[in-house]
Amino acid sequence: MPGGAAASGWTAYTPLSADPSYTSAVLGQDLWILALALEFASFLMGGVNFLTTPLTLRAPGMTLWRLPLLVWYEASGSLLFLLSVGPLIAGAIMLLLDRLVGTGFYLPARGGDPLLWEHLFWFFGHPEVYVIALPGFGIMLEIFPVFARKPIFGYRTIVISVLTADSLSLIVWAHHMFVSGMDPRLATPFSVTTILISVPFVIIVFAMVATLWGGLITLETPMLFALGGLASFLLGGVTGIFLGSETTDIYLHATYFVVAHFHYTMFPVTFFAGFAGLYYWYPKMFGRMMNERLGKIHFWLTFVLFNVVFIPLFVVGLAGTPRRVYSAAAYPLFQPLQHFQVVATVAAMLLLASQVPFVVNFVLSMVRGPRAENNPWRANTLEWTVESPPRHGNFALTPVVRHGPYEYSAPGSALDWTPQDQALEPAQAAGGG
Ligand SMILES: [Cu+2]
Image 1 (cartoon, rainbow, N blue to C red):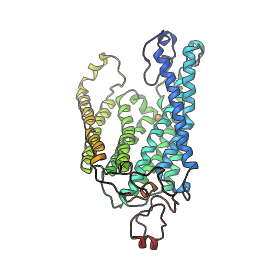
Image 2 (cartoon, protein in one colour):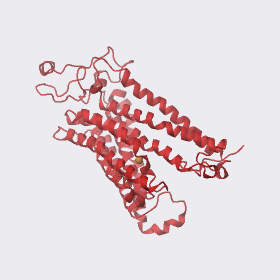
Image 3 (spheres, rainbow, N blue to C red):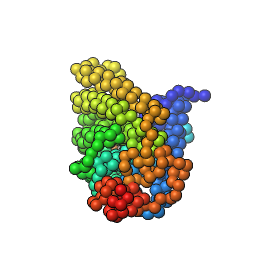
Image 4 (cartoon, rainbow, N blue to C red):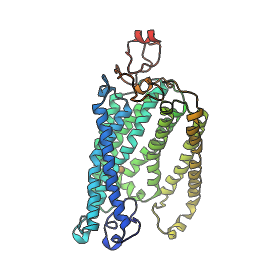
């Protein structure tokens, strides 16, 4: 029975991962590839669920243009996953066939092309970044209007922008391959599409800032995390332009600059937006409020330490420090930059430690937190019209939706919010208040 762990890195680049002389005896590599194919096939089924539910099971009156933006962003992320994951699953099966059956999709000796795997991998890999990011953006888009007490700026534009980003993200993948050895003439069109894709994201960020502009902003913990996520993501977006342009990428590609850029895009949309969502919906999930003081301590430590970890990595990357160093022999060359690495390393450990206030807050608030009202943030979306936590089946009666989710501070109304299942007429809203 052959043994051994998978040993071709997280990208499993061919020809190494397909080469029988190197890995034919490594069962772990076969299992790794099989697990990849199965895992993504199961994600696919989850994605179908996230897409079909908002398309087929909306409440009466909930037109597509009245959907909360989180739902739009979840659905468009799922759609993108659906469109991009097929080639990866097929590519993984082809890789297994090369290893086990003796086909030659990726092996030059058998007439194959190792770059094919990189194309299939990144045709999925770039959209996948958005599949991860879009729900995080959706959370921020839910939170900003609530804590600025303003309608969202440019609802339809925000939706159209995300669908545009979805489409464009299917034709940018080779920006991960500028130094792979592909035909350099191919780099230019992929640079152009990559720079183009920043346009819909700039529009989305503009809409977020315009929503905040002039609002009655309050800085509760969910809002702090959403704002911190937006601010950090900007740095990730801007540095992406350097990497999307093939001329600068050739220098930066194999350096720590990419590590820093990647974390400035992914950390904000997963951690900052994820925490924003947890703090925001915690009262609905558990019927109790989290502690604001601990939440704020958690936010500021996370925000400051995150930047202390990753800003130094931009510096060492610009200076040329390679990522993926396999031999200690390369390190003396970069000795003068070591203090940046030390700062980043210590900050990374402190960043982990600074999650303790969150864990304490999350667990203790379940038993000790003050009881949450149905709608502690005075939000419009339907989940806030039911008890906290919701009963089985969520709604006693199916709600009828009467307007969009972000109608805050409507002129002439006494309250500055109107839940989606209540009519918007100012007189009626004033009477109800
Ligand atoms: Cu990409």
